Image (cartoon, rainbow, N blue to C red; front, side, top):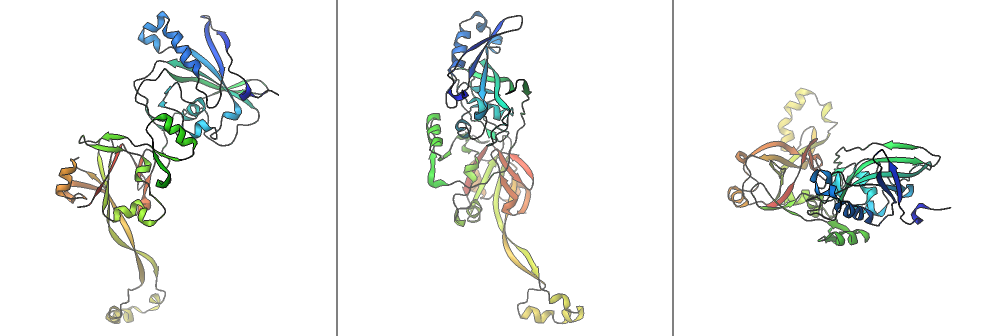
Length: 374
C-alpha cells in the first residue's frame, strides 16, 4: 500500500479551458517549503506578461494535493504557527495552516473521516508584498512580516477528494474571532524571539515564545505592541497576578488606533456573603429598641460582608505624553478621564489575543504600557 507522505514531489500537467493554461500539481509534505512556488514565479517573471503590474496579480496557479493525515492541528507546522500574512501569504507559509486560517478546514486534532482521501488546493502565485499582516481567524493566528520575501500566494479554491471517487468543493470562512483565553505566561521558560528561524527552533523545543514589538503610541512615544503575554499573570503566586500589581499601585494604559484607556485599582468594597438567620425572628419593635445595644456590642446587623478588590475602566479624554501624565498624577485625576465602568471585579475584565472584554464589551487593542502610581 502506498502512503501519500512517502511520495516524492511530482508534477502533473493538466490542460484546462480553451486557453490551454497549465496548472502544475504537487504533493504536500509537512515541514518542507514549497520550492515550486518560487520556481513558478521566477519563470513567470521572465515572460512579457509579468512586465504589466496588473498581470502580476494573475500569476501562475498550482494544484497541491494534501494527504488527509496531514489535515489536523497536530501537524507540527500548524502547531508552530508557520504562516505569515492574511489572505496573501509568504511562499514559506505552511499550506495546511493557511487553509485553517482561511476557514477551508477546521483546526481540530481529530483526523478527517476515513472516507476522505485528500484535499486539493489551487493556489495562485503572486509577487512579494511590502508587508504581511497578522490576524486571528478561526482560532488560528497568522504572523506579521515586514518585508517582501521571494513570492506570495493566495488560495483560489479547495476541495475534498473522496476515496470512492468524486469531489466536494469547500468554502472559505473569513470570520474574525477573538476568543477569551487564559492569561498565564510562565516567565521561567520565556525567550525573546529575534528571527523567524529562532522562533521556529524555540517552538520545536516546545518553549514559550514571546514576541516583543515596539510601536509608537498616540503621542509618538515607544510602547509595547499589545500581546496577551504582556498583561498575563507572571506565575501562580498571588503576588505575581496582574490584579495584584494593580493593587500595589501600577496602572495599565491601553490604546486602540484612536483612543487611550486606563485600567486601575479603585479600592475595596464590601460584598454580602450571607444573612443572620436569627435576625429574621426578631420583632420589629424589639429590633428597633435594641439597635443601640447591637451597635455597642459590634453587631454588624443582618448581613455579613467580605471585602473585594474593585477596578476602574476609563477612557482618557486626551492622550498625553508620559511626562505630562506624571505631572498631574497616576492614575489620572477624574477631570482627565471618562469613567466607563467602575466597581469592576477582576473577573469582569477578560483578555483575548486581539483585545480586552470589559463587562461584555470588546475593545480591540494595539498598544499597552504599565506605569507606576505617583
